[in-house]
Image (cartoon, rainbow, N blue to C red; front, top):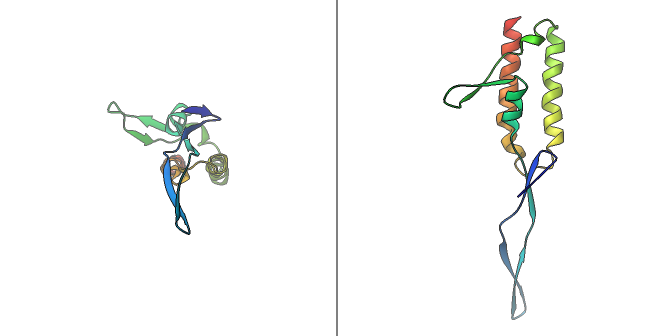
Length: 116
């Protein structure tokens, strides 16, 4: 396993497949590299989007430094963060798992707007 540009790279398990050509059966196996987005929740916690309870459960929090901005500026800030994450990790094999990160950001946005 190697970490490269914020992603975890590891070798995929070998999955053999068989090709049949006439009376010959050939077994082949390809090894590929899989890339996963990792440690995003910890990065969001370090930037103040999340808090952690004593039981290591993370929950979204409001960004108090953004309360002075207008509603459209707050939404633009969060949209910029979400779009940037999705574009940066578009190569990752677990892009569908980024929905949890997006959920945290959307709820943090809602809490920030609720403080206004």
